[in-house]
Image 1 (cartoon, rainbow, N blue to C red):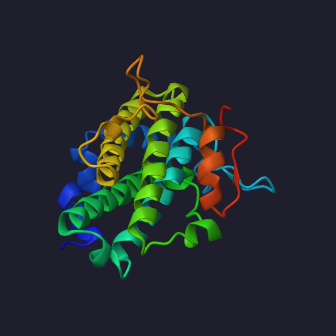
Image 2 (cartoon, helix red, strand yellow):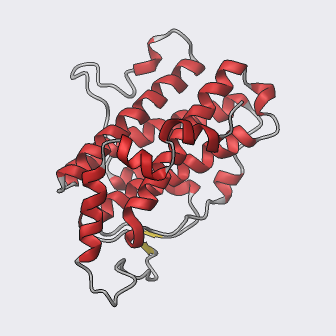
Image 3 (tube, rainbow, N blue to C red):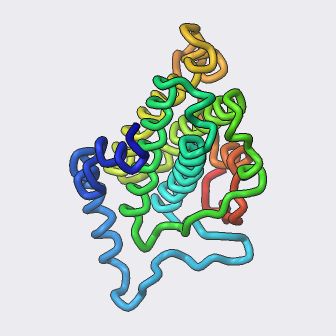
Length: 238
């Protein structure tokens, strides 16, 4: 079975070709131009961390760093899942393939944000004891946690999209959230195969047919339990 790194290369070739193949050249260029507008002698365009925690920045960068934090969490989770000693014991061959694919996608998403944000990126996050206490050797626990993270990620992108000003950024966010929704559907099907849970009433409004949304504060109320790094969310809309 391919490793996460091999899967990531299969999907994206390498980071540079992923940026190109994903059709986000305009986004990368916008980031570069934004950085060039900073003073040449200012190597740290991000606001410095304060006693409130790591700054997410301002404008569109705050939303992109918000997404980057969530992608770091998801990538770390799936990496632990597929590298656990019990992975090949508790999951079937087809389930292993699916989860390894999901892990590769999340690593690609994380690395995309890291590369695109450049000096505007928040640092690597430290995960909490709650994250480290997840029983990665238990199938039911892994899938339940995966469901939580995937549903959370979709609702986070849906809720934050309206705060993105640059349309190039919004296009990429739409591409990523569609992948996250595929993940959510696949995980739900692993838990309850061939049922309506792939798009259950708890995640898709049965009247509007639209996926649920969460505000950043609602998202961090859930995700924050798994992150030890203190993050200043005051610049995010509530």
